[in-house]
Structure formats: structure tokens, C-alpha cells
Image (tube, rainbow, N blue to C red; front, side):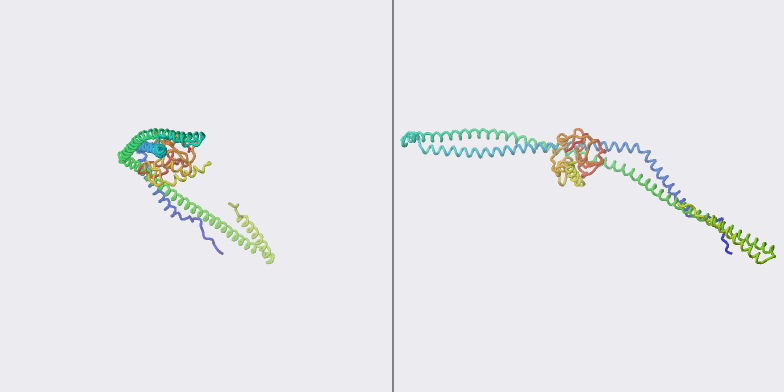
Length: 436
């Protein structure tokens, strides 16, 4: 007879769970320390926020000041280009007049030489040399035509000479205007360079301040997030171990139940044997009858046991056209990382309006050169109507422009020292929007 080992006092091994729980408590203590540090940082939040807001406000103020200076320089350059174009047109017209005057002078001189060769008695020679009165009329008419042609040439020569004199006078004025505009360009150039030089150190300090504040908050937040991740991992490990222990407990409970059932069967079998022995002692009349009775008893008992076992072991229940705009956006984004240089229109460097005009020109659309001219000359849209490729304008008066590329993102040429970049549309407050 095989006996089942008792399992009534068996329990799952919880040492691993206890170890994991100790590690979890250590991590929770560490996270509490981090949260305490973050709490101290939160206590300084107002001061840090005020410092950051003030630094960003001053940074935007300086950027607007620099943008305005660059805008004035660009406008001066455009004005100089227009004056130079007018000057060249005057020079071209004057050159054409000079050529016409030369031809007229040659024609008049030729006529004069011909008349001189004919002599002062030209009209008498015409009459004497004529064959008949009709010939006299023909020769007289020819002479008058020559003299009339001379008169027309002389009048055209006088008009051309007067026009040339007027053009020369206008040329003097245009040269003076060009010189003055060139001087204005130089003045604006010096102003921009001086402004950049004056603000360079302050810009570095502001950027360092902002970077320090952002890095401090970022570092502390990273530590808190790392602690949260470690805690989540530890809790998962504890939960997994607890589930393993529960599974082990269920297994042990099943073993205890099986052991109890085996013990009950063993006792029932023992009782059956005792009853059979008593029956054999009492039934001395017939060994065959006793045997039959015993067999019947065994069959009945076995059937009952089998039926009970079958019942106990019953299984449990189971468990727009927008093509040009797309080209403009792609072109602008392709310039990200290139240097900013005021007055530059690409392809190796850009200022703000140089970037937007370059990108749209690549899409086959010509827009004005400066940010103010772009805002004044393009179709206005609201912020809710913004589409990729639309232009976003800043400062009052307008002196900076960027291109909206979708979402909350713009691409812009900001200022010297910062390469072409993408930035948040909401980082600053635009003053207007326009669509090429």
C-alpha cells in the first residue's frame, strides 16, 4: 500500500518576494528623496519662472531691435537698386540719343557739302541747264526737297540735342540720388553692425541664463522620470513574484486536496476490508456464499468508490493647388542648419525675408524682398486659416518674417549666431499672417 506524503503544512517559498519588496522600499525611499529635491525646486519655481520670462522677454526685445535694423538695411538696398536701375536706363537712353545725334550731324554735314559744291548760282544753273520748262520744274522741286530734308534733319538734331541736355541734367540728379542712397546703405550697415556688437554680450548672458534654467529643470525631471521607471519595473517584478507565489499556493492546495481524497479512499478501503473480515467470520455456513457475498460487497463498494471518485474528479469549467506651397515648405526646411547673415538671400546664407522669398521663388512664385513689403503686398489670412507655406510676421513695426510649415511649427532665419531653424509658432506673439 502506497501512502501519500502529508502536505498540510507546506507553504510557497517567499524569500524572493521579500527580497523584491526590500528593493522596492529602497527605490521608494530614493524616489521620495528625488521628490523632495523636486519640491525644493518647485519652491524656487516662481523665481525661476520670473527669471526665465524676463530673460525671454528681453531676448525677444533684442531680436526685434536687430530685425528692425536689418529690415531698414534691406529697404535701403532695395531703394539703391531701384535708383541704380533708373540711372542705367537714363544712361542707355542718353547713349541712344548720342548715336542719333551723330547720324544727324553727319547727314546735315553731307547736305551742306553737296550744296557748297553746287555753288551760289545753283538756281541759275538749274534754269540755264534745263532742256524745257518741265525740266526746270523737276530740278527746282528736287532742290527744294534737299533743302527741306536739311531743315528736318536740323530740327531733329536740335530736338535730340535738347533731349540729351535734359537727360544729362537728370543723370546728374540720379547720380546724386544714387550716391545719397549708397551713403544711406552704408549708414544702415554700420548701424546694424554696431547694434550686433553692442548686444552680443547681453545675448550670450541671456542665452546662458535660459539654458541654465532649462537644464536644471530638465535634469531634475529626468531623475524623477528615471525613478518612476525604476519603481514601475520593481512593482512589476513584485507583482510577478506575488503571482508566482499565488500559483504555488494554488498548486499546494491542489496537492493537499488530492492528499485528503487519497486518505479518504484509503480509510474507506480499510473499512471495507474490516467489514469483509467480519462477514467472513459470521457466515460459517457456506464458503461459496461468503465468497459470493464478499465479491458482491467488493463490486458494490468498488462501484460506489468509482462513482464517488468520478464525481470528485469531475473537471472544473474552462477559463491646395498646394503643390507650390509644398515646394516652398520643402525648400525652406532644406535650408535648416545654414548660417544667418543679414542682407543674404541664399543659397548659402539667409536673413529672415531672404529665406521666405528664396523658398517661394523656388516654387515659381515671386514675392517682395523685405518683411514689411511681403506683409503689405500679400493676401492676409487669420491664424485659424494658416496653411503650410503661409508667412508669419512679428514685431511692430513689422521687421521679422517666418514660414509656417504645419502643426505648431515655423521655419525661420532668426539672427546672427543662430542657424536657420524650426521653432514653435506659439513661442512668440505674431502680429499678422499672409499667403503668397
